[in-house]
Image (cartoon, rainbow, N blue to C red; front, side):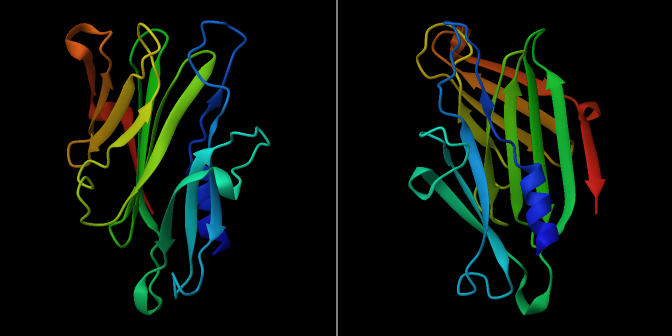
Length: 197
């Protein structure tokens, strides 16, 4: 169980950042993730609960009241292990000042834990999403998050996903301030690393 905790915690992408620049478009409240042990009633063979939220009080951790979503990751039934069997990590530049990152962990059960984000010199922001095997959207395991990259502060949002067969990743930015309301980057398989465990 300790190994599962360590692996999941090490793989979580915690968004933080900030600069003293008045034009900085990030809020003062960083996104965060915490991992706790699942209740025996929820995961009879053991497991973890991945909690996501915003550290609104700035104490460096996600308190119970700050949790906005939770996902259980249980060990397999009948004593089998639902360990991570594969990971795919992709990264690439979107511009001279902006880089994208996408990672997906694939469990023995087919469940997926995907993390994505963008970062520059003075900031990084992103999110993570858990998909159950067969869940709608699990095919590309898209991760969505808000960060206004262009124009006025009106809530532009990002969607990052991966075709796990071709290893082509797609980065999409939606904002009324950009031409046609959308920017799309397609990144080749050469920018991805696959690990089998």
